[in-house]
Image (cartoon, rainbow, N blue to C red; front, side, top):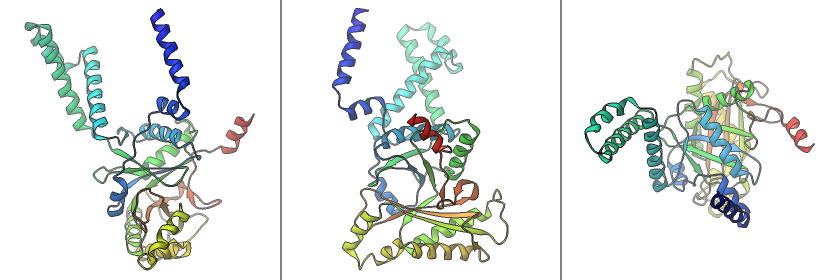
Length: 348
């Protein structure tokens, strides 16, 4: 008992001597950034989630976003990108844990092995049981594959970006819709740090050809989706958020002749024009309605760290009316439904 108390006192002493960021990392495990993501986003369209949060609360919001996505993705388990060595270690740890659980609950797959191992020594029996449980864990892992989210480093504060590899399929719009429904029904507690979760259906470099192609593809998918009950003429709106615009302009100014098209698309009116033309090419009888659009095309400039000078990547989604708000501007719904009440209770 005295030894345990001494150990606790020592641990408390070490924690007090730790710097604030070291204490934070000791309590909250934050995944590593995927430094291969910028090059992948330059050449391949990817889906994912863009999360907004308070400045200097990115670590807390990362932990909270991971928890929310784990609860709302459903049968999938949201696993965040880590290095290959850590990933192997985590898989091994999960398999060992699964093996122990199966041993405690007398897993059916190990009953025959247990009876067959009774003729051998204890070590041989343990080996047979372990192999049996590891085989069961391996088969379960192969049958139910989890989508992997990569945490991407950004140059802007108050933002988190999670991307999904191309070989993983996940309906990001449906996921955010479930999150909002769970929050409205009270099945999910209102988050403390995550303000909005923007579902990214696709990404592309900021140039007119790619932007029009992606928008046209997503609008076709939206119109052909039987879950969307659309009236004629279809009402649509376009939202454009230029995050990190100052840094982007500084990068592009070095190669103005090469990147003149990107500079033009940084202009809000030019981008609106390109997106609206793409929508009308797919749905000729569509009309602009900024108050109650049946479909909204949202374009988000992503301030991704590690991109070459002059390279800009945007996230694009086509969303239904129930996921967006039009006041004070067109954007994804907030996760904090009673912001004023929350702020008032904190100040008291």
